[in-house]
Length: 520
Image: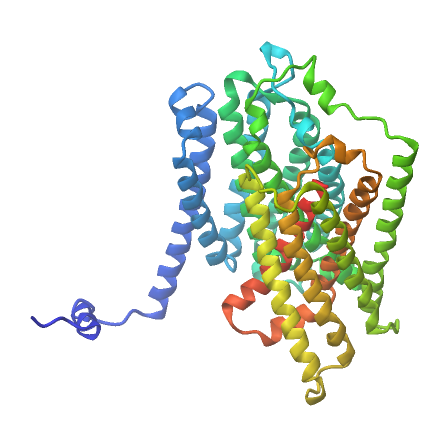
């Protein structure tokens, strides 16, 4: 029996097409498809909103919210949102319509609705569950510390957008969509303010209502999903958003500094919020009742440090603050009119190697052979972020080494010694990332045995490592947004998969380091 080849099948399908479509028809089909994709993405958000709202009154909705099927639902929704973000990135009006609807419905209305309905104070209505503040004592300060400067920056963006209303240098499309652009900036500025207030002032000091535990977990998962999608959107559209604001025309010489600061804040803010809400949603301790008058108070009470422990903690902070000179020297090297030798990057290598040494001592005391038990979904997600960063740094190290070797044959390399030093820096950074993934899976500084906390060097290592991880985070931030390596990669790497890796890898590495900094 003869089998039809692919060519024959195409011939058969061509019999149903009389004439090739015109370019106008092709454009109309593409526009219609974009509207369809955006509509389905918005329908998914509407479905989440209705499901979360109706679960307050209908038990069937609660069972749906808590079922394993929701994992598949979120996956399908993520795929639809990804398609909407990527296909509509150049369609200004459609992109803003979708963002406005999602920001208002989920980022503001649903967030306020759930915070009021699904949470209550301890000991109200017989509530004996622990507050979110018990699990992450310092997280409110961190969220506020990132949100406040981001809000200030977005106020400047809103002001520059308003000031550019009659600017004839802007494209005609932007001037026509000016009301939409202002509305978009205003809504998402308001959303960040509301999210910070609700998280820092409401959610952290309340707990799940006994009859709404599953509802509250679903509420937090939806907020985590929303912030994750906004993180993806910021990766794709951040440059375009800054251009639409007219900030380059308004701020002129300060524009580059402004853009670097904004990009770093918005990307890390959304990823931090996504991980934070997801971690609270999956926190097992939230579903267990506790004795408020006994063990929990004793367990969470902070033991007074002895004089020697205070001294070692200060030693650790001193070592950590010395390590902050590494990102400072790295930043000074990139200042055009300040002649700094390329070997200053050796300080970054020293900081990363010190992290490995201190971490190895940590592991030795807690047990190398101990298996990581009960890995949560958040831990696995954070480790995946670190793994992408690890691969990215290794490849960057190899490419930098290649450029260092071939620098004498190139005319576009001004300082060959830069690549000579940055190659081992990226290699050691990648190895440190791999080690920190292992350390993160093995150790939990919250549940660490109490006998280890009495060892003097423990206090030195914890505080030193915390600040050194912050120093590494700042180094990565500077290298990503200021260093010539990334701009050179964008010009020379044409493969799509590698482009995605080099764009997403550093951002994911930053997210991993943020979470690790908070972990310690």
